[in-house]
Amino acid sequence: MNDNKIILLLLRIACALAFLVIVVGAYTRLSDAGLGCPDWPGCYGNLIVPDKSDRLNETYPERPLELGKAWTEMAHRYAASSLGLLILVIAIMSWTKSSLSKMRVFTSGLLLLVIFQGMLGMWTVTLLLKPIIVLSHLLGGLSILSLLYWTVLRQQSHQNTDTIIDNRKLLPLVIVGLTVLGFQILLGGWTSTNYAALACPDFPTCQGVWWPNMDFNEGFILWRGLGIDYEGGVLHGSARTAIHMAHRIGALITFFTILTVAVQTMRSGTKNIKLTALIILIILFAQVSLGIANIKFYLPLSVAVAHNGVAALLLLSLVTLLHQCLPVKK
Image (cartoon, rainbow, N blue to C red; front, side, top):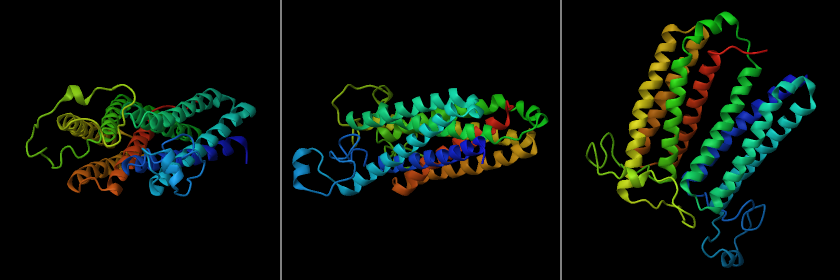
């Protein structure tokens, strides 16, 4: 197996692992296990979750050991650490193999992003689930996943020039779709990190009305100082309602934007790109259904985690579409 095939295999494994880290991270956050280990990088001073003991609870009286939450948090850290090591291996290969020299800038940048992502993971714990930090950690994970996936697509591409020319006219629309989805992911992350998902317990209305009492100024303050424990949220009801409604409005805009992208692609794209558009439509309707189910069934953990995972898949499907509209430099 030559170097290019080996690096492609490693990139595919890293991509799958990055997706797993995002899903496990969502489960960790949504099961309130983000502070299952109150220290970092270990757990109650150990690299493996310790057995429950009175000594530990005396050392951390504010965070008594809960084995389930601690193991959930550490599972996320183990998976993230494995991803970081794999990306380090990929970066080292690119610098030691002359046939991979074109990848050196990318792999070095990706490695720096992973290091920063690790710091965000540390700050998530030490700053007690500060929403802007948790949101940045989520976005960092999605960025790493998208970059890995983009590289896999470029490495394995066999597109011909005629196909690219036919698809390139769709490029502006695809970029708009990605931009709108990016903002919606931001709103979704802000909703989750501020515990605002159930601020509106009914659908399609909110608290029985179409436009409830909302405090947008309070809801979208990004930095609130240090030393605040954000587990469970600190915002009052109208601020959380404002965040939730912003996410709903964003979901409506995102739905029609991506629907337009997919329909237009199916109408004017080439044969191979139409399949991608169909996949986007399927994922889009699945994501909307999961969002509504979160409200109707009061945020069941499995549905909430799936909502995060499918959002990542929707992002990757649009990245695929972007790739199919651009030429590949060999």
